[in-house]
Length: 482
Image (cartoon, rainbow, N blue to C red; front, side):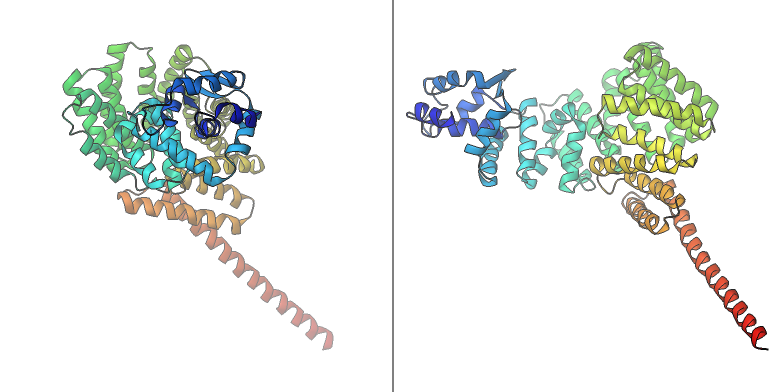
């Protein structure tokens, strides 16, 4: 069929069939007719004449589909045939994708171009161009609005997830100086970028962005606006991650007061405020107060968002963790299993939220000495965190430490020690980068010392037993021969 198309439709434009179908194959989502005509244009024209393209387009009608103006293959067999015939090797694949990348790089920044361009650069391993693409603040905002986890994975795959903070901050400072930008655009970018860097544990670079967003929004909207409450929440979470809990609490209480007064007591934003404040109360051992706030947040989210919403799963995880710490393990396990089911259904099996739910359930099972159930859950949680956050994120270190505890509980000390050493290496590197010691690092060091002490003590005990046994044999022989 493809050969017939080449015979019938390549008289006026040689390569029309192979080039057009190859480019559609190489794109992430397919191509619009406008994009395709521009890519196929002769050197002396702005686009391929419709008279040249239309006969082939009509012949392809049954094999193509149009979704929102984007042409793509309607059947997998046609896609496979195009790949075999027109994209026979990696060189041709990369050639087509780089042609597309050049095209989308020249287009105005839009949701469309920011969906295709970074993907094409990633597929062709053009890391320098991908680095520059992701640092562009306008492109960053388009990408993060669509898929924050994809953005994070690009940085992880480049191995730059621990070093992107400084370049992002410098890029934002340069971008924000443009005279045509409105304050609301700058505030939005500062908030989104600050939150993204904070989640990557790049808090030093995130903090000035959070303060910038808060300052702009207080000036623009006044001190009691819901947008200010959102900024306060972001800043408070950053303070929690840098272990400045005394500074965190007044921000959270102010945010809750603003949202209750502005939006009403049952608004989802109030549930967010309650959840964050409850986390602080739990961290400062005010458990009864924390449970009240968590449960109030859960009621709001279930009523306003439905029982299977992502945010309901987050709330369930938080309540379950609190109940575990209060020794109410049966209640905690039920909530954790429900949270895990919600995360897998709403986010997917490889999402960071799923990793959190798996980790929490595995820790509970470890504490209940159900190690055979706990280990596969924790290994899966670690694998997800490794892929989504990068190998040097504190979440990965926590998963490693938890897995080491489970493995050690099954008397496999030789497997537990390298897990502890890797976790401790991550914590030490983070402390060196940020100046903040992770509290769990002390637990990790203590576990490692205990493991090594136990191994030494076991070796000494065996030596003593060996000496006693040998002495007994010697005494028995002396009695026999005397």
